[in-house]
Image (cartoon, rainbow, N blue to C red):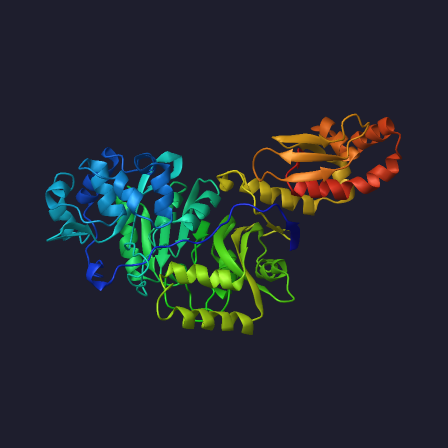
Length: 522
């Protein structure tokens, strides 16, 4: 196993796990509510789509200002934007803003009696109230989907129940963009929660198995799948890989309960395993459940411990798997920032317990010598190869989405670069990768540039500083001639020693292949 480690890249967008908290007991869906009937699911889905209760429809209806305010949990602009009795405004107030809607207005749009029977709404003196949060979601190829979770509670109105089912957020979107393309025979969604990842797996695989230790999550997920017209997802109850012992899958996806905490209160975010142990266990055990060439893709938190490089820590998880892959750190938070994030997530900010919980959490991190907590992606491919390579690096800048479309090329590049000896590289036919351009920085009028850059306009949007030899190679290599003769020609044109150029170029070129600037044609 070869671990390729890269330094920090430019700072940029932040990736965090997001969630919603549950209503108090008197506004909570019963644990014994029935699965939504097929006919009702079809009727409700048609109503939602006809009213344009979709990602684009809601975005257009709210507008930029109200959408940004809603992301900050400020409801007034969204209320103002959804006034009136037209269908979309009613649906937004009911399902998204969790506002009561006049019974006559609600009945004009929705089959209220059937929804009451399914446990999704209630009717009272103040009108019709939603007992779940029903949000639009965009599936693959722009198909409309819907995600059902526990309702939102705002700060000062309680904390999550232990079995709270979180809605889809930024972390869900990040994982969905990471998933490699199919088609596959079988896919597995570990810790399905509200069922959102299964919507994306269903577009890639003929059969999807979705597991969760939380029985309530499986019930709500089944409503998600029914409303999104995804019939081939099979729910199973249990923790991590337990429900699928002795089975294998072509694609495994997981947004695990990775929050690192001294105690475990909420099933949706905390595993009960110490530190970052749940992520380590998911990675180490993955090959036993993957087909040859199968993928395991998950989001993760990992500890930054005093005196230890995070790459060594995560690298140890993957080094014994025999898999090739890609590990990316997208964000790092200091302990205080991390604690504050998750206390806000559970609506504990401003509560009497806030200071005690904050202190206990910080004491835990101090005992464990934790200096930071990383957030990122782990993608493994079960290559069963002795020269498997896992690349570990850090990105803070924006990259092209969806990542899954070109992720196999990233892994192939790292594995190819690791495999090639100097002699093999000089004999290889190499081509400049698509969308790579050259930039030269120079003082006006100067005969030579101060620096030469290769820049990827798409994909990971990396930038590499190169010398004149590599720049010259980039300008002529198209895969038709081996690298060695091209370097000899460049040496002659630049009046350099061919032997010296042949000796020094393979290491630089190997790195550029691993980073995706060049590809080995044959």
